[in-house]
Amino acid sequence: MSQTARKIVGAFSILILMAVYALLATTFAAANLGQSSWVVHLAYFFFTGILWIVPAMFIIKWMLKLPPQ
Image (tube, rainbow, N blue to C red; front, side, top):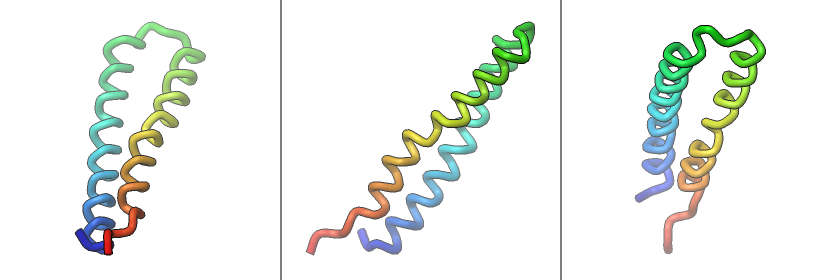
């Protein structure tokens, strides 16, 4: 796969990852954290806001990998 095609696929993959992850994290929070204090909400959304970076890093590494020559 060419570098340009890899970047396009990676960009769309990250967008899909972010949308699905945000929906899942928000659905989980709405279902389980409704009666929790604001500190629990803050901690939950802080950590889930950072956690999506881990799979995105793997996608970005794949996007930047040079094609075999």
